[in-house]
Image 1: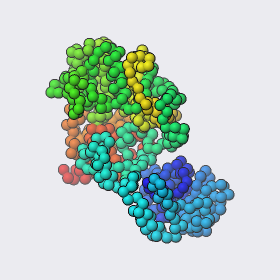
Image 2: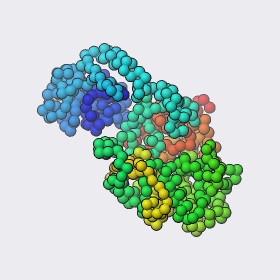
Image 3: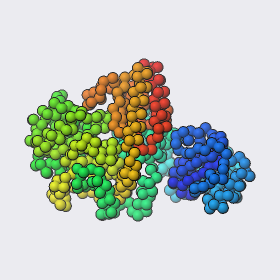
Length: 584
């Protein structure tokens, strides 16, 4: 439940607010929150409107109102201190068939803007027509307490949410990293996101550098994706049957990933990996799998392993509940270790069904591959008859339209995609050569099925997202430049305060490690100072920047991040590191 500004659907509507004072600010804030495209015109504006303009959430025209400003608008809010001007704006807007709200007189406009309190079974509208804001605020508070106390959906504040979540979920969360334990505080709970920003249950706005862990390459609530989802919801959210958007999305994926001739849609990256390994074992008649320490491929039992005391080991379960028998056939070697990889193939090459790797590691922080590493994997897998699986759940459609394989020119046998491929909704695919994929049921004997596989919401969101990416040939160059700007800026700021910092980055993703040594694998990643990162996180959060609450996760950028956002992040980072250096 919550307070809503009006009974109108504002999503994507072009809204002009004339005026820059308190009343205009009260009009603009909820319109922004409900997805309106807001322009404010006034010679002077409030600090709140100034901030919204700097954050890119509204357009500011700092000048007197002109009649030409009405052109192209869907809704106008006349909110100046001059009742006569407001009335004139209303009259002209009506002539142009534009809906108008007049703050100084409810009778002169086409609609009023009551505060609407909505619960599951109740909708209350409250308005004093702008004449008694104090009375309005008092009544709203009373109504909120009277009708929202203890009811479903009425959670106010991060601390309140966390307290209740602890009674419902393990650790109060539905994925471990969200607990914020690595940075020593209770988590934030997000109310909504728009573009490059999110707002939490305390009402605080953050520049978001998590972006649903890389799934939102276009940013939060991109208008075209949101429109496509709204249209699909009206048509149906799940069929459990075949539909056209499965085909349309699959054709786009295959166009950009030539290694994927045939694919199967599933509901997550974990499910895709599990299914791909089953397929690899069926295709080769072998049992063993080679993976690399620090690469995460979902919570598949056989891959929840850690290396033992040597550089080349059988996997030891890294999670309770995983029998050793499940990981006995998993070989783990350090990422980027060419010699350990060579020894692994010499020892187990003829027993390996598959080698699975993140071509750019993103789950020990961002770690780039050694120039020869992926090529060596391709050569060895071909030599020994094993399948090469690229897990591009993170890098697919992020570093390029063709993922990392499109940049490095290496063609894997099977590819895993998710996140961006599903438009940020629960989604995954595994696919590869036609002769391999023909082994999957119903064409072959490798069984895999799922009620929600190829869900119409995810496929339509994925199709729309990829279409938007295709239409902007400069998208990835711009994303790479923003990544470079932040990466270089963080390095320079850290150096100015004599803080050890090594930053790894690929297009749209980066990780700052508080260490002076290059980070190339888990050993060097885990040698970074976690305490410094936790302090950095806290300092950034206090300055309105949300980054991963773990030193071993990637920061993600999107098309919605602007150069001003990058500057704001670096300004916050400078303040954070200054405070950190002062206490060292």
